[in-house]
Image (cartoon, rainbow, N blue to C red; front, side, top):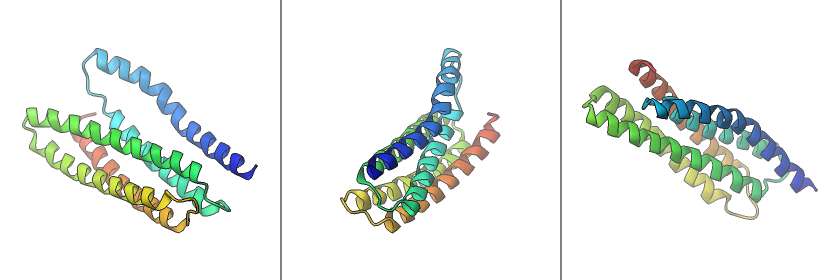
Length: 167
């Protein structure tokens, strides 16, 4: 009973975070793609969502009587997927900046890519600690903090870049 209650709570929180993004994204993306415009919010949303999942998991691990492997797997999968989406978007931006020979943008992307790589490494460390039946909450909580710190750096640099680019 306790396991299904905890799992239901995490799914509810995840749905609350994902629903506004999913609903708004399809509308914005459709118009942006139809007009051939760059959608500057895609990478930002992915990084924000990864950070939100990480923060929620850290709070769950801190307060749950037992960290459930099912909850951990779902959450770590979501964090990883959002980091990968952000990295793919940055690769697309790098390709465009390279075509335009935009050295300032490329320098910003170097910083963002480094922060995303750090987040991905911390995420991998988190996954390594969490693939057990009996999870010690302290390890994943530390990894989540590292993911958060790296994503905060990436988000801040991305925001500066978007302002520079006029988005």
